[in-house]
Amino acid sequence: MSLAGSVFVETGARLHFGVLDLRGALGRRFGGLGAAIPSPSLLLEVARSEDGVSAEGPDSARAAEFARRFLTFHGLEGGARLVLHRRIPAHSGLGSGTQLGLSVARGLAEVYHLPAEPAGLARAVSRGQRSAIGTWAFALGGFIVEGGRRPGDDGIAPLIGRFPLPERWRYVVAVPPGRPGLSGEAEAAAFEQLPPPAPGEVERVSHLVLMQLLPALVEADLAGFGEALSAVQRITGAWFAPQQGGVFAPGTGETLIRRMAGWGAAGVGQSSWGPAVYGLIDGVEAGRKLAERCREFLEGKGLVFEGGFARAGARVARGGPPAGND
Image (cartoon, rainbow, N blue to C red):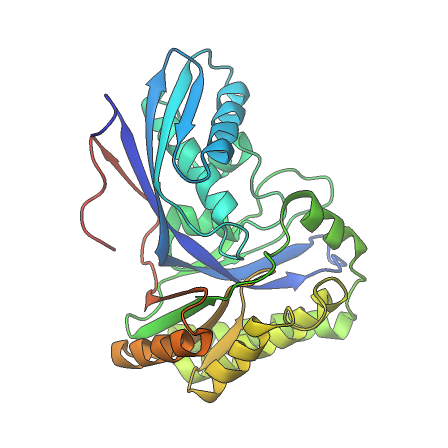
C-alpha cells in the first residue's frame, strides 16, 4: 500500500567506463565516460512528514541521511517518509550511492515543490564531487561524456555530450562475490595517493574517445566502439593499479573480463572500482548467451544482469510505481 501523497522514483544503475584525465594539466581534472542501464534498478517511495525523517527497506539508513542533507540544504522544517522497494547492489561499481541520493532528492523536490535541476539535486545531497557520470545518467540516460572539474570548483562537472546507444547493443554486467569496491572516505584517500599518469597516456585516452569511440557510437559500429573502450579501460585501469592491485581488481572479475572477451564481447572492462565487470555485445540472443555463460562461470554465486541500455533518465510517478519499462 502506498504512502499518502507519495511520489515514486525509479532509476537504473550506471556503468563508469573510465576517467579522461588524472593530471589536470589543462585546468580540469577527472572527466569521464559512462552509460545508464535499466537493470539493476532502484525503486523509492517518498512522502512528506511532520515527524522528522523515517525510512524502511534496504539501505534505509543511507536514504534517511540523504533526506536530512536535502532538508537541511534547503532550510526545510518538514520531514520525510521513505520506503525503498528495490535497490542497486551497494559498493559494486554501479553508482548505487549517487542513484539513491539523487532519487531521494528528486522525490523530495517533488513533494516540496522545489526545482529538480540535476546539478542542484546532486549538490543538495553532496554527490558528484568527483564524477558527474551518475548525475547525468540519472537525469538523461544514454551514453554520457562529462568534462571534469576545475580546482576549487565545487560544482557538478559539465555535460559534454549525451548520445543514445543503438537498440541492438546489449550489456552484460556481472557482480562476482568478494571485496566491495572503494567508496566514501576510502575512495577519496585512494584518489589522493594516485600518481599522475604520463601526459602521453592522457592524450591517448582523449584521442581514442574523440576519434574512435564517439564516431563508432554515432555510426553504430559496435566493433570499433568496443575496441576503443577496451583500450581506454586498459590505459586508465593502469592509472588505478597502485590502489586496486592491477589494471583490474584482481580475482574473479579480472578473470571474467578476459573470458567475456573470448566469448565474443566487443568491449569489456570494470565499472569504477568494481567488483562489477561488463561486456558489450550485439543482439538480444547474443546478450542472453553471454549472460548465461557468466552465470555458469560464477556457479550461482554473485549477480548477473543483461539488457539494452537506458534511453531515458529516472522516472517519477505519483501514487504508484512508474508503469512499463524504458
